[in-house]
Length: 548
Image (cartoon, rainbow, N blue to C red; front, side):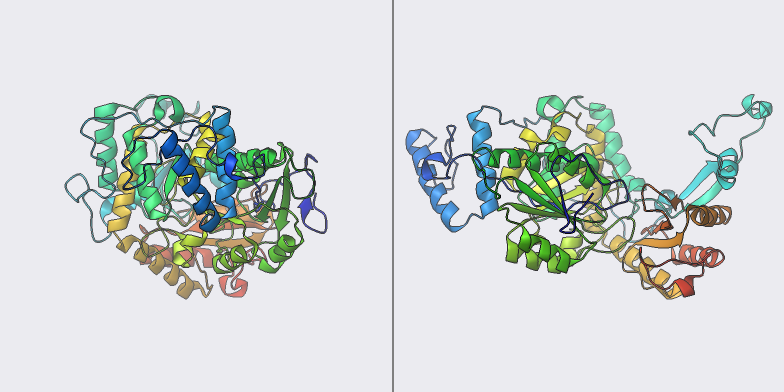
């Protein structure tokens, strides 16, 4: 699949399976033409609305815009700004730039940071409702099938023929209480009363909202408000909401492929197209997005060893492409380790690539203001595109791409996973916005999750660095055995197996939440010590194996 230089052949039809290497993206956009002044602002760009400009458009205003744009381009704009501008000019000349027209709802105040009132009530410590995000129940029949490793299609709640009394309602069905250590609700916001009240209010007033794609009728002032809040949180100019985090990566990667195809229209040498550099353990959504981008023919993919900056630097040095994109997870979901953000920032300055970070597991959890892993490492300004999800720490559903306004316009015009998907329902969007407000005000949640990390580290001797804990136990049979043991001890922790992870690197994946308590961690580590030799295993990701 991959040569010694780490490059895959274009259109070879080979890809990376789930759990294998992902891709870092190096994208190159160079629209047709030589990029001279005559091409700038093509397609009838009007007045830019600059502060102090009293005109309302027209040829004079457009000509001034052209001159100021050329000046700004030569002085302030990076190569990537230029290439995106060329791609947009091409789309504009073809009359296929697409617009978002928000549907307005009366009595919906457009405030990115509303005043705390009864609708946005916040609290200063863990409350009983927070426990709803980590205390769950499963039916006894589900428990027994899981304990015996019997396959299930989700129909465990139905009573079998022997359960006639249950079927007739004469005997209540039995349930088992479990402590959830495998979820993604890292801050416990899914059960927050403020989030629930805002969602309920939106349902009562608007139902599910208009059902349609964002470009048709599914985009509302609620969606615009959430985008503005996310852009502010990620320190970016703008943001584009997507149906899921998976679709956000798919949309962006296909746009990268589109730009590569434009850049190759008049170029015939080795500098045409797009080069994509991807970490070996990137998420499946990045992998699948690059597969689609490759089908547009002008994409070359390089896979660098996991978090190996020397290898990435070598690949970048040997790459002749002008346009490069490096894409990486910020916090790797199956290993719990961080991308080397500071080193990536230094390489970005050296090689002038577009840095794309999927901050799915870091958003709201890291950084002083919850801006995520880039903020935590002090390099948010060096991240060009930040992709994320609303289904983890936000506790809701959906995805987003935080970026510049021009990148947003390009993605909304060419990102098929965005264009051809129905927009998220208004109550979900309203709940996500409420969760962002709550997370910013209830700073104790980020402190609580870090306390749980430190407690686990102290109790086990494993120097974990994040709230995602990867305990590699080896074979699939061993991982299933450990998972069944934890189930019988009252913990919901699933075994992670191929194709999610490679064979013989099966594991227990444990996630910590702000809704967990120190006593929860104490019980967890005791149960783990009965099935895994924690002290012998030490600290490891995929290069170490815990002993059963």
